[in-house]
Structure formats: C-alpha cells, structure tokens
Length: 457
Ligand SMILES: *Cc1c(COP(=O)(O)O)cnc(C)c1O
Image (tube, rainbow, N blue to C red; front, top):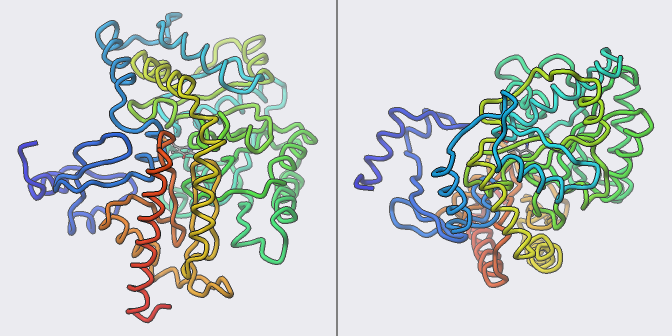
C-alpha cells in the first residue's frame, strides 16, 4: 500500500484487462482502487468510505471482515491447502459441504457437483442435461431453452445460455442447441395486462417454443428465479408455477440458476422456494462462500442423480478445483453463519419488508417509473415522464449519470440501462438500510437536477 492512486492506476492500465470493460476508455480515466472493506463499507485508495449496496458483485452477503470465514480458510490452508477429488479421493471439507448443502436445499437434492464458479456450474448443467437424455435413450433431446436478457455466466456455454445480445455478437454465440424466449419483464412488455395475467402469458412463450422446436427435441429450460444482472426483474407470482406446469407436461428438465438468488437473497434459502417451483438442477456460486473465495456447483436432483449413478458409468467431466478444500471450508463456515444468525428468516421477516417499504416511498420520486424488490434485492426504473412511463433515449445513458452521483456520494448502486439496482448484504441493520435509502434519494435528486439542467426532462 505504498503507492499513490495514480501509480496504482498507471500499473493497472498498463497490464490488467478488466472483465466487461472498454479497456481504452478505462485507461483514459483510471480505475477506482478499492483497498479495504469492513462490514458493509468499502474504502478506496483516496480514503473515501463507500456503502456497498451491491454486496461486491451479489456475493459478499455476510459483509466484509467476517472472522469465522477468515478462520475457516486459515485453518484449512494450514491443514491441507489442496487436494483433488478426481482419483477416487476426497477431502473432509468437500464431504461436509456436500452434506450441508443436501440439508439446506429442497428435499429432491441429495447430491452436488462442485465447480469453481457460476459460469462453470452452468457448463456442468449443459453436460449433465445432455448426458441425462443420452442415458435415457433420447439423444435427440438436446435443445435447452433459456431467455433473452438472462445472465448465466461468461464461459462459452454460460454466455450461450445467457440472453445478452452484446455477448452473443462477440464470438459466434450461442453454441448450437440453445434457443431463447422473451423474459417476463412486465414494465417493458406487459403493460395493458395485470401482472398476474402477464405472468401466465410470458410462461406460455415457453410452451410455444417447445411446440416450435418439437417436444421430443427439448431437453431443459433454465432461468434465474429473479433475473439479476438483467436488472433485478422480478417475475409476476403466476410465472414460475405455470413454467413448472409446462415442464411437467412435456417431461422437460427444469434448471434454476440460483447463483444470485441462493443462500437467502430472496428471503428463503433458494429462489425456487420463494417462487414455488421444483427444479431438477440448481446452479449456485457467489453467496455460497459470501464471495471470500471462488466456489460454485450444481445441485443434482434425484431424477437426474439416480440415472447418472445407476446407469451412467464414468461421467467424463470435472475441474481441477471441483471440491477445493479451502473453498469448501469457507462454504461451510458461511452456511453456518446464515444458520446461526437466522439470516434467511431475517431477510424474509424484517429486512426484505423494510427494503420494500423504502422502495415504495422512492416510487414517489419524479424519476422513478417502477420500484420493485424481492427479499434483499431491488430495482428502480428511471423514466423521463412519470405520468406516461415514457423512458429516456438509451443513448443518453441516464442510468450512468445516476450511478456517477451514487459513486460521488459514497454509494455503490449499479445501473442496468436506466434501471438502478441494489442487492445489499444480508447482515445490514435497519439503521444501515435507512442510511442506504436516504443516500439513494439524495442521488436521485442530484440526478434529476443534472437532467433538468441539460434539458433532458
Ligand atoms: C454471476 C452469475 C453467474 C456466473 O457466475 P461466475 O462466478 O461469474 O462465473 C451465473 N449465473 C448467474 C445468475 C449469475 O448472477
């Protein structure tokens, strides 16, 4: 920590290519150097304190500096920093985490396949789904249906499952056998219908796609219970039950990408429990270790696990770091904190409702056309005209203007287009939530002033 901010920035832009970044424009302005974290706050190299309303990248659910997690990693690093689980070997942390995951996930899940990240977990999903149908004697059932504006990671399979057009256009994606339907985004596509009506309409797009592809060709449907990176898009309550009905009717595997929604974010242990559906496979990552160390995986439900175990033979797939003992030790410690502190119930009973109340107040702001929350995640849709919900010209990048005011005022809030989103740590106090909401209102006011001065509203 002996360098100045300018020295850090110079070395960063000389050697470091950041993810999802325009390298040239970042080099021109220099990146912000984050040097320290404690509880829900971060500090940058200039000494500014910042309230981290995004939990890092949807992952530091227990806040920074948790001694239990540091101790778990330190102990495991000293005892056995690495051994693999390829050669008919295993390690105690991998076993114990597998056992604990079977305990906290819905009852159909008794098995886990570990990966190093959410993207890798979704690659594993593609391998498992296709292997399952091969073993069932239906190798032609290889098409996976996903949704536009979904985020399932950044590897070749993850980006293909995802529905981000900007990602597909770089690298010839999606890979074959992955198709997309529209997302259940009421604000954009459902106006004229009630939310509940629209939920059923959006779910039926899955049925239409199944019939178009051919029911005997469709292997699985994958979705995030609440789309996270797509802008915290909370589906109508009617959506997932109808998706479940359709998957059941056509015998299609249902995959829940719980990388963000898992481990309490929505007020239940997993998002599928909040929205009332029963997945066959479930991807997790991020919150499993509270982001302290990389870990991901796939929960494999009985339907797929029994087939893979009973008639699968060797499954030719795995990662060096599948079941990494240090990562698993931190995973165990994180789940123990969630259990001991009753954080999932706390999100459900106390924090989630308080965030929802604050967002319903923020919905009165002249710039806000829609305010939505689910547990400890929320979105504010910025609009040009509140009366008609007319949106801004996207080239104005109004969301980025707002995000700039947030950064300058000690708040990390993310912009997805003109949708401002938060996913605060699950350990926040009510007082800290109040502090966050006051900062958000102040930044909305500053944004409105700036837009008014430019004549954009
Ligand atoms: C972040 C994310 C991923 C990808 O996880 P990585 O660890 O970045 O590979 C996959 N799915 C969802 C829903 C995510 O939010």
